[in-house]
Image (cartoon, rainbow, N blue to C red; front, side, top):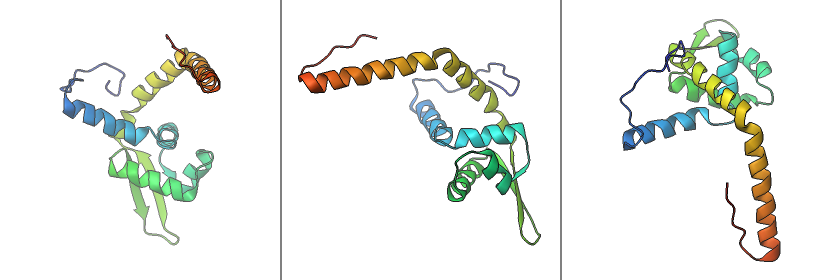
Length: 144
């Protein structure tokens, strides 16, 4: 999708090794616990200082925030500017590349809203079946 939510055709066929690698790298970038909250926070309000980000992303430690900001900056998802002041002031914002993630994250949120409860039920049923297998020593066949 482009930044307006329009589907665009790309030269990345799902069956190609290159495409699978690119998708995997993208998932590794945004698939951790903190990347999406940081991106969504910067999407809602930019630029933000490090301390503002820390207060906006519940539960993140200063060390983890610094690590995630470096990873996202290295990938070009966020920008960073250091102002020569005492103490140094640093601001972060979403780049155009980072902003292009927003329609995809909205799509993921929509999928989660539609299917999240079913995923939870499936996990609960799976866990119950695994406990039953362990207790009985037999294999339970699951059909989804």
